[in-house]
Image 1: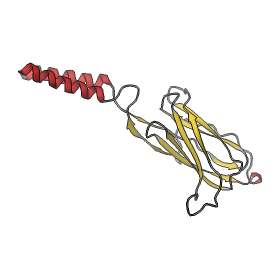
Image 2 (image 1 turned 180 degrees about the horizontal axis):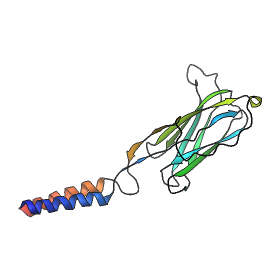
Image 3 (image 1 turned 90 degrees about the vertical axis):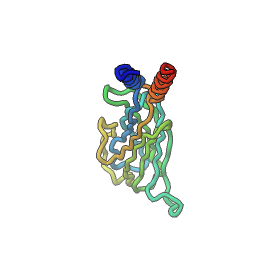
Image 4 (image 1 turned 180 degrees about the vertical axis):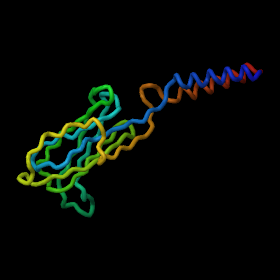
Length: 180
């Protein structure tokens, strides 16, 4: 086989790999929450590049809760559904009723049910009379500096890398058959 023919096959395989799709990093962020009065409902929300309809697991736990400190009470968990957003990001939200939460610091963890996109932040619950009224927190357009965002490459609807590998194997098999 000539070098020219081999170069043509290699170029076709590279083009096929690009067309088949690539893996994109999935991201989820949480807006800043701040201080919340006990016995109130707060909406926790954020942005994500996950497609609408995906489910996120949201867990709110008191910091210090664990086997050695069972006296700490409060916390909740549930799922949030990703909603259609603007051109830059989709959004999600989760309402938390702080009735029964003891004053203290709480951790919020958000995890994508089908992948590795996670985010976390903290907020403080104070006695009901100790907080001055503040406007309801809305999801931020950007991830605040207090939010930890972990991204992991995962296949998206654009197509996994598997077709690229299949195209490469098919090209090699065709080359070997043709060579004989």
